Length: 319
Image (cartoon, rainbow, N blue to C red; front, side, top):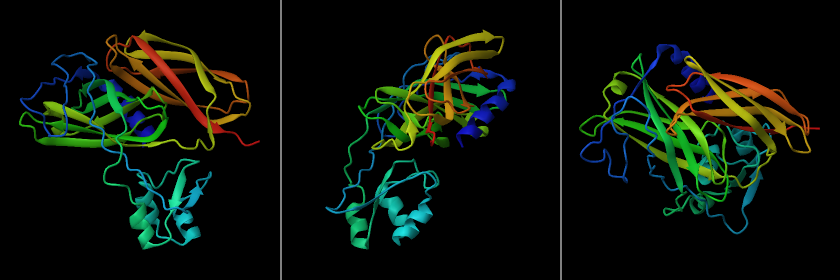
């Protein structure tokens, strides 16, 4: 889904962008928390929009739970069959939002009876995760679609994954016109760090919106890193505007003692006021321990880019 989203961004780039005109309605479209909207302008203002994080479900295990640690190649249907339990029970107990993509190292609590399912279900008063949505920019394409780009900021002391958010568009009367859910482009949102997102809202409803809301739907703390490679560093990142393109160069270095594979570099370009104007991901070939490799990527920013940053994640390469 992430690759499709980025491909769509590149495909629409040739159509050109016009800054979305957004006004503040007399009252919030929905009653869940305060939302500060971008003032009318043809350029991205980068005004932070505090999200309304929903509580993150936390399971309360029994004294002697069965725990399955997800390994590479594990599928939820096979795990359920191995323990002879309904797959839906595992999903509900562990609050799984993406059953088709289990992160390696994730600890799954396996319920053994219907009583355990009820006991292990998330509590009704879970602790909210302190997450904010920052550096937001909305851009209308000539085709009438609207790109919403920004970053999720993690104020926690623990890294997160499976961070999902929702972008909603409203008319002047506060009625919902369009809505789309997405995950952050980078799988990991580091502790005290950020990860970008890009959401495309299309159709006639996108053309008529007057205000919007962004909220974080959920996130999962990374309890075990599993096969993730944590020693990839991106250095020397520089960008240069070339007409309607932004050419980015940098070097990815493996500072670890083991090789890295499935390396993906996430690149974020910002306007002078801090709003995200472009995102892109590029894949690199495996890197041996202490090896480095340069990369070049071309972004199509929705407004002139003034700065850029990049981060790389990958998997540990089997010896």
